[in-house]
Length: 141
Image 1 (cartoon, rainbow, N blue to C red):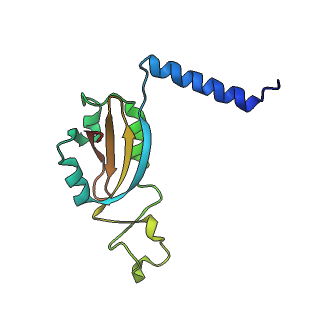
Image 2: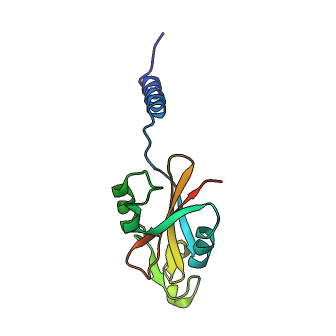
Image 3: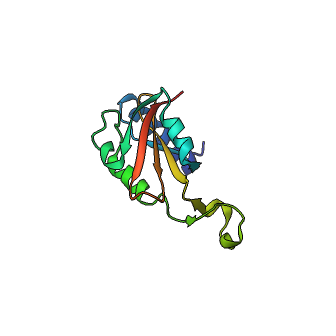
């Protein structure tokens, strides 16, 4: 029987995942990113599933956060990269040449969602109007 290298790598990866899951080791994992209106984010953060929130500095001491703080700081640092801040998002003459998916209006925020342990997730977001990122931690539904 000939065993391929890819098969060995897959088997090794599965073994490492099983060992790490059984040993309780967990790191946050990136789920998705996108753009929302700031008001939409406020409504999400006001739900009953929200456990805590604040600015990026507050995350370091948040009792509900059990991930890697430096990874989140790095993500927050580059959240607005690639976007162009515009007065009004959309197909306006002043936005000519800027693809719509790369436009960010003053009323929008860029968000990243990370899975945390114990059925929680971190909603990290950043606005072009503030010099820091904000977050809230919520229970997954």
